[in-house]
Image (cartoon, rainbow, N blue to C red; front, side):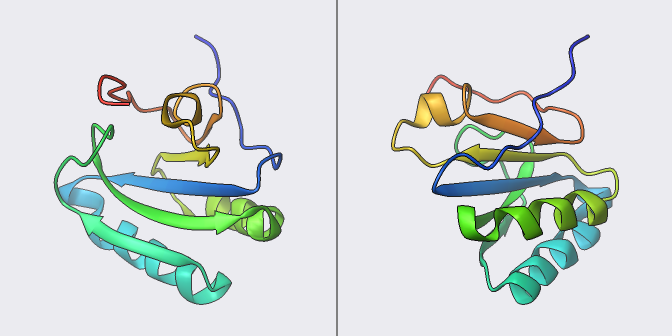
Length: 115
């Protein structure tokens, strides 16, 4: 089994999608709130349903290359056992969710059909 690609700071903008389930909902919600507060980042809704290509419940955090070097190590350290997809924002959704997709923790299947 190959290891998921770790995030690298080579793009201007990013999304981090924190994945969770019913058992980790409270932890994930607090993590996303804290990330927004600590780093001044935009945090999306905590979705308790499948949204877009995501096959697990998720919360999106938007950040730029300027926040990357402080935010990503912090997120990795504080995410517990949650999986986090970090992907570039290049304007090509398919490439962003495949070629420019990076992981903290285990990778999660992405539904690429709608991209």
